[in-house]
Image (cartoon, rainbow over all chains, first blue to last red; front, side):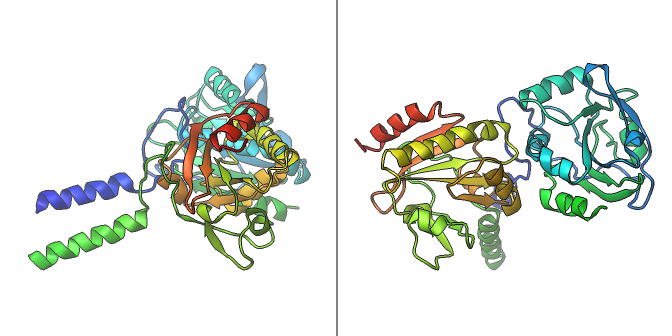
Length: 192
Length: 187
């Protein structure tokens, strides 16, 4: 009887719907991970900690350069070449005009190094928004925001910062699922 | 003891039904799942698919057409974005050849909300119906296929039988339409 019950539980476990999105042949399967594995250090209403990070082509992006000019959406993803992450930014790639109309700059951030991010985003067909590498010192910006996981990857997080540099929206999301687009766009539309 | 065991079995069956059946991907000759899709008000899907007025949900086998092409896609999938203009061209070719009433196209988007589907529809000016599958119920039932995935279904016999089941681009619209006509015996 114990064996039968064990088999039932196993079947239930194996057939539980995964929120891990759509897999492709060239992404690394990671299974289901601990949803959140960090202690967030920032809150809505805080001034967003400044940072300076490299992107492709020897460029650097400094968060504070947008202060007084643009809203900023930070999209942290855990790791390149993984299922949910590979199914997130390509969607934002469709929204260039919408972000521009909402006076918002989108910055993608990952703890991967630049060559990895370059290869990964090329596979996506290229992205119109900057992708920043928080690789070295490893995950320093993620750690500053309190979203560096114990395995060295970042949380899947959406942080919206208004033109005064204040955090207006913070979603440290279940790493296994993609954040819905509606609340992000709704929040951006509320910003002056 | 026996009662407890039967209770566990009942609980197992209920929980299994709640998690959704993890199906295998239907291949050529298989029946397509009879799971239902929800019609949104005002999106023109009812008229295009030949459904009765007031119908709120339907099975693919209810669609009034000889053949139905089902695309599994996601707004977040770059390959689906790249394929979208070609699927639009296929729809245009079908209409140009006077086959619009006999061959219908629809899309199902696993993990996408209605809003996300509407973004995809708007960005690519898609004229055939698209349905969200926010909880991956269809995706699970179809064996968690990659995207884009295309199923061509023979809808003539009151059930949808699979004629084509492939992941990835179908190539050019012209070549694929020729294949459709042969596979679907629409000479």
